[in-house]
Amino acid sequence: MPRRWWFHRSFDTPCTIEVEQTADFFHAHLILDGDIDIRPGDQVLVHGDPVRVAFGQKISERRQASVARARWLARAWTRVVAGLAFMELYDVSFTSRRTL
Image (cartoon, rainbow, N blue to C red; front, top):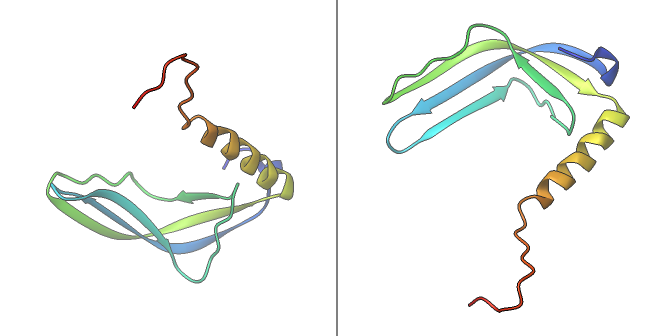
């Protein structure tokens, strides 16, 4: 994981990866074993080869993951940047006419 000084500590934990690519669903979920709270700035790295799912399939695999806890500064920086990125979702127009 890059930038070690940005993180407080890291640990490994087992996890389950669920990937589905069908006509109804296209999603990927990662479920960490135990009661692990992922907070802003934390990073999760799943070990192993990339998961490849053909259309119409659903795969569930057990893997190992490394969780790196962010320091307080990284946590604060992530919150600031996320708030600014959220502002990009607003559409503001400065026209003289009203739209219905």
